[in-house]
Image 1 (cartoon, rainbow, N blue to C red):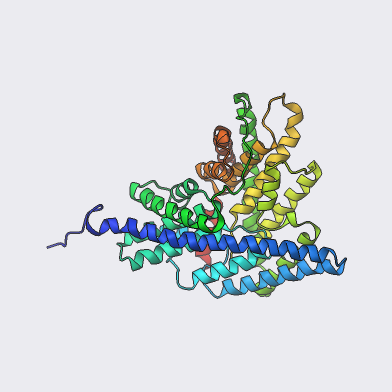
Image 2: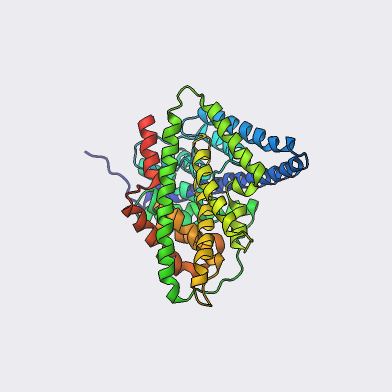
Length: 431
């Protein structure tokens, strides 16, 4: 006689929600601590650059050496733990598809320490990838220790990865949409509830460490007039093309670096780090995750059109190069900075053609952030909601949705595959 299995919602099935909430506490504390470490590393890096600037030509070598050393050490840490290098989001997606196994024991310290060193040293990488990966690892471990059934354990892995994204950007709804739209490609009531349980507790606990404000607080913006929607549609199309080009450059850079088989990975990371350090010595805004640059653009920081073009071009190349250093670090935060640059540059170019009462550069920056993100990741709802939660600019929701729609369609029409699909296939081929 077959053994009857408990139906969802009875017996031990409700245990998964308790496990998700408790795991969310761990994700919030770990992710909040990661963000706190990066904030202080950023301040320390700024202090070092101030001291180095006062030493003349010799001082310019200090950021070169420090970033090279940081990239090399982070790469060395990542090489000792499978899947610790890179963003980790592609691994979370592969686990959901049952193409790979979840990693927990050594992944957490490797991702945490390696990510702090790599991102803190100034590489053009984001904090969200490591936090998502660590969150998923915590969810998987919690599912096993809580003795949930295999399907719930798989959902917990994905759900707590979404909680990690929510912690990275203080964006609980963005974390939920990320799980449904990007990681799993499905909307299941149980998955949604598990993700909500994890994200709410994770963000609440993280706020005890990093505060409860938005990542990029903006003054109240006026709602753009409806006649500007076609302008945002065109802006989204150009952002989608930029995103497709960025995706192609990330993959191509990895492929080119793979050809240098005789160069040790640690040496390659050091060379890339030295190059990024040289850029940092020239202008710190050209390097790092990009939060300071995004904040400056969103709050009306003065950058000439020439400076916007140079910064856009340099970060467009520095991001894929930093990712090729094979250290822990994500792609989202640099994408948001790239999108803010693109949005402000677009406004600078089209504003002479627009009548009075048009949206200002801050609105274009927010829309650009979401649209470039969408052109790369191909998750339009996640991009739009992330932008709203990070800036508090709810009045821009309609332009954001229009631009993200246009970015998605444009990138698809250009034949660009979603970047994490490509990175996941690459990871599996090299496993």
